[in-house]
Image 1: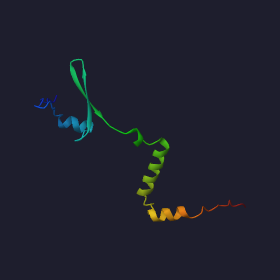
Image 2 (image 1 turned 90 degrees about the vertical axis):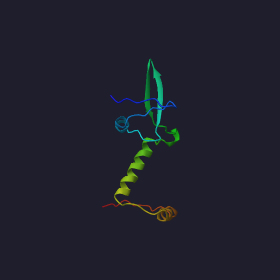
Image 3 (image 1 turned 30 degrees about the horizontal axis):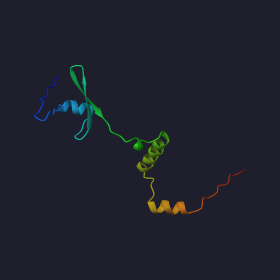
Image 4 (image 1 turned 120 degrees about the vertical axis):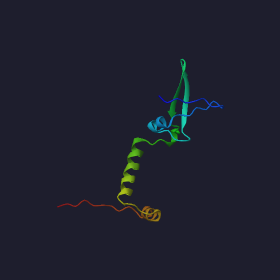
Length: 95
């Protein structure tokens, strides 16, 4: 079991193996809590609620990412040009 030493400014170094296993990186936030006679450190992901996507938005983003991977992209100018054109009406073929 790895052991760390409390520094002069009450800093504790989390062993490299544990950081790698948990995916901790420099600048990450952690929650520090006292439980009985122990110190518990938990990784905290700080996300603004406004930055979360709805399930529908997530689907649109995934679809767009897939299109980009396939090379299906347009420039902003092309998109704006297409948006300025009136929508075409499609007629159903009848046989």
